[in-house]
Amino acid sequence: MSAKTKGWVAVGFNPVDKLQGGNYIIGFVEGDVVQVADHFGSRKSRHEPDEKLGGTSDVTLVGGSELEGITTIEFTIPIDSGDRYDSAMVADGDTVVLLAYGKKDSFKAIFKGEAVGTVNLSTGFVQ
Image 1 (cartoon, rainbow, N blue to C red):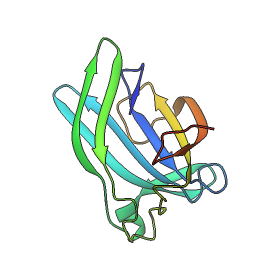
Image 2 (image 1 turned 120 degrees about the vertical axis):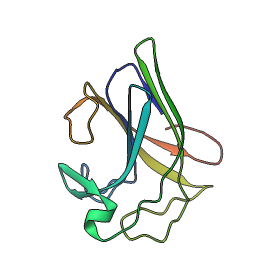
Image 3 (image 1 turned 90 degrees about the horizontal axis):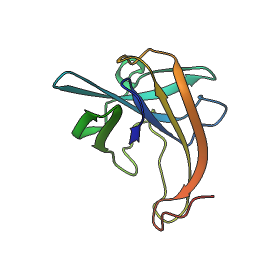
Image 4 (image 1 turned 135 degrees about the vertical axis):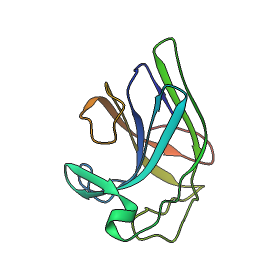
């Protein structure tokens, strides 16, 4: 995931009502350190780390960079982790995706921009 920001970037999968019920991967680059976290939409306007809610972090950091004002975080997650705080995705079906970014390097900073769409993970087709 990438955005034109020197702050955090995030992607959410299958939110039910605003943020609620979605699986969120949030990351930022601070100096030479890349941080990534697995969150769950616990309320319409709030997300929290899976571990705080009793789940597990199921994101694996692959890499990250902050170059020319663009923050990029590379990660992997399982299609279905089995964690009740991660929404299972279907590879050959539609997945609602929420994209967001913020100005600060923090997992709690307010978002600056967002977009929502539906993507087929198998074909890459976006609705």
